[in-house]
Image: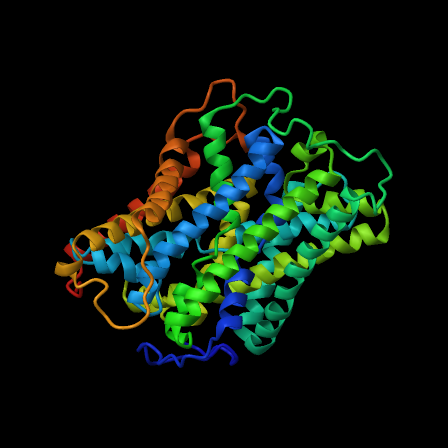
Length: 482
């Protein structure tokens, strides 16, 4: 694998690098928090409110997202500390689902390869750039072309100026925490009447369980809303992919990972409170991915300040784009080393993995018809992860029930044990998220962007199916299958 601080040069060896542990508590916390806090909290809250129908249920879903994330973290901590190697879910699935040979990891590899892209963050970046420039009617296709431009720039920097790109996304990571802190502080000042608004302060917390007009409660909407909340927490498992590089993972990960998730959950809840303190519910529901930009416009008015802050949010998105476009091709490269994806001989070269990341991101941006592409992308990206979580958790239950036979939990060291009721929360939540998007919604429910209700789960299942087909092709037609 190419160095993180050197330009990408041709390589002739495909052996795995020797990882030197160098990540302490602070570095692991930064790794997790910076990955979690991406586009979601600046773009998703209005979508959650629209799907949940009330302020109370919307806030409850954000807390539930934190609880589910903690339960998932518990499962992954036990796996990670028992199998302290780079690779994450691939290692955990391989440990349990061993037959048929290589099937589970090949199925897992396909969505990791095809959906580990930067389309959603790039699209939100384009939206915020147009918003900052004063475009009242943000054109969907203009945002998409800006998104194509920013991912092209990011991949170019990673290939040709790797050291510079690393410094840029590390610096941009701090902007995320700064913006969230600013939103929370302003919301508190407004609530305490220490910051005046140019309009009557919204009374959004009166009868918080009351649904907005024309909302029709249904399980489908709640499932989609929770799926989007889970997307906003995506990244909590990030340290599990680099366990070989963490100093004393038995102690470091057990402290840093839960604390990181706790901090993020508190931040997310308080930011949502601040949004509701400032933005009237009628505008909140219709604000789309520009919720944070509208928040700052309400605070500062149509001034230069209200334009500057959306630019900062766009820069925060840029940091996430650069971080994902830096790490995702390296995951592709590792999958290629084990011949788990098509054209593995090409993608063992990191430059080709970078190119595939760019190409897939651009195709997802330009091929879908005009509509709510952002929401569709995050739903499609989240659904396969939900299914992987189910198989990982079922695998842990199997290992607990067959600990002696499987020699599970017998190694020395300070381990982590995920109690059955905690793992059951994670399993139940993911089963809910996997099943209900396949259930037809009420006929009166207006679906987002003109997509059929089954579009994103079927797309996710189809991508898993491609992995199964690729496994069958390798097994029955390639002599090199091992």
